[in-house]
Image (cartoon, rainbow, N blue to C red; front, top):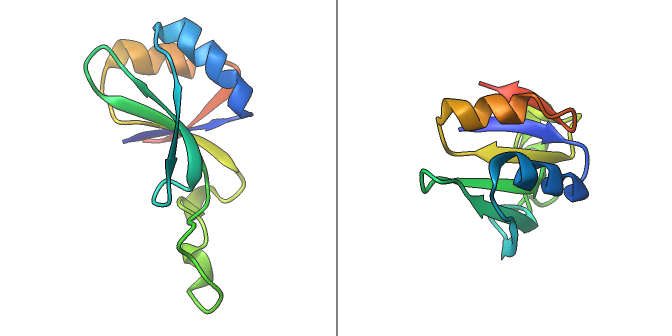
Length: 102
């Protein structure tokens, strides 16, 4: 999985334009509550989600409070399941995104 930091949810329109996809709203406790999902042409998903773990509760290890504790300074993330090099290169060029991994 490839992970990018994204400035805010409204920047999803820049991603939609760059890749010709459409984000749809979804809900999932596992994915931090409200998130946006789009399907790439290779049938792989990408998601804009909050960097939180909603199943964390007081008393749990603090490092499990975030979905991506290694990226604690970023509150909103774009997860890309695809290895499509063209799509990843287009995303990397968007000023609203910062590539975090891999």
